[in-house]
Length: 145
Image 1 (tube, rainbow, N blue to C red):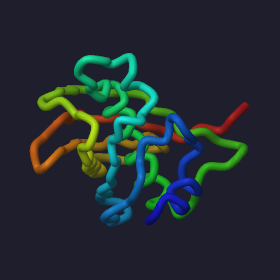
Image 2 (cartoon, helix red, strand yellow):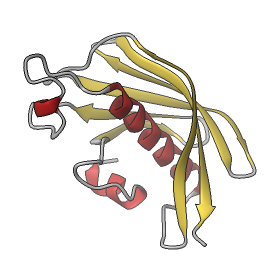
Image 3 (cartoon, rainbow, N blue to C red):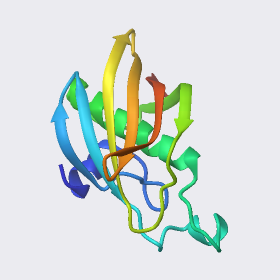
């Protein structure tokens, strides 16, 4: 999937869209995405000017966006005006390697469980084959009231 397909599946837009490409997809099981991290990211001037590092919360958000794409691919649809995809939980988040401008962040999420619209994922983000962050994520699709 290229960026055009991603934009059909995620409601996020610049500067909050954090997935550039889908590299692998096995609906119902796993998805691998890529984020090209550039010095032009809007968060780098403030985090940190003397040593730019991608904020850990944005790495987790990028993993959650990857999980959302997998959910939509698995369900065979995408977001619409009557529903919203919420990131509802995170367990065991660990940050093991800083992510810097010029890095390619490779994100992999795998379905652990899916029950009554609640999804649980194992998620890992890597740079150059080394784990930068990992966590267990929970997401859900809900109707907008």
